Amino acid sequence: MNARRSGFTLIEAAFAVVIMGLCGFALMGIASRCLAVAHATRNYHTAASVLDAAELEFPLLPTNPVMDNVVSAHTYEDHFVFTRDVEPANGEEDLFVIRSRVAWPGRGGREVHEDVERFLFTTNHP
Image (cartoon, rainbow, N blue to C red; front, side, top):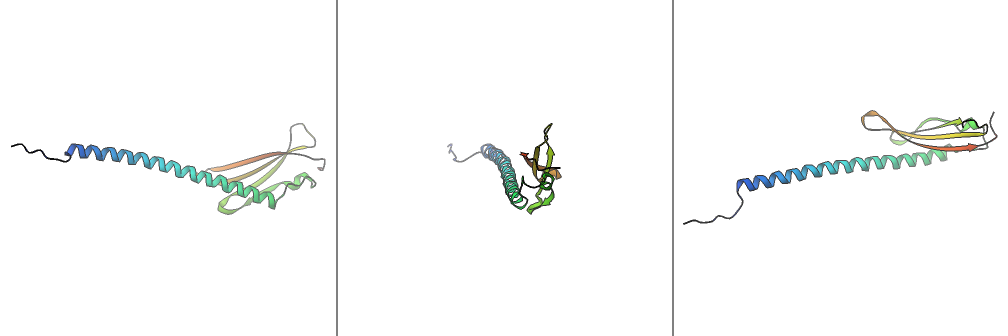
């Protein structure tokens, strides 16, 4: 008498475990990338907030002498650093390039930064 047994064979069960392991491994990679993107997004959002706060704390005033608008490194929360440089525009006497930068430490110790460049036309300079 041949009685038929129901259930999975050992090979079928091992094959299912391998497939589930591969799917889990792929999902871990996807989740890791999603967390990295969320972390980068949070840093850029914080950088935008720091830039706004710095622009309120150190307003760009065209009525002041141009070099009074320079801001040396000023540190905010979570090691975000704001700086502002002023350079004359190429070949223009009354036109200046204003470069505001927010920098923060990234992965592996490298610096990540976001720059905003504006032009300032003024006759109030030495």
